[in-house]
Length: 118
Image 1 (tube, rainbow, N blue to C red):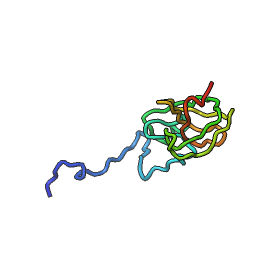
Image 2: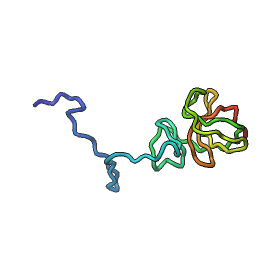
Image 3: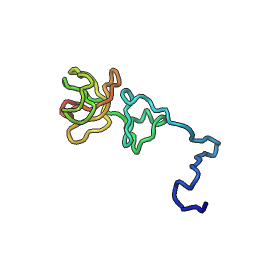
Image 4: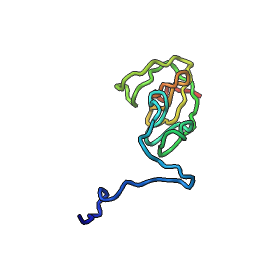
């Protein structure tokens, strides 16, 4: 059968480093509820475990009483309440919402940006 030049005609790539380390098999990603990573951004602490476009060092902020949510919206599922004075490890602050994790239990989610102070 002649080759068509489509990617389905080609064997899957094998990625091997100079040390002989090969990237094979499924990824074993850490629990996203307790580890802050998305395709576009991840905590620098996860750099050896997950692949993301960018990595950020968390910036610790103090919260006023607020709700940790699964998405950047008041309609997103509530994960848990955050008490006044609790620390939040912020990785992103955009459009009025901060994404990161509660420092005490590492629960990942979004909080209103105005609930955070230095």
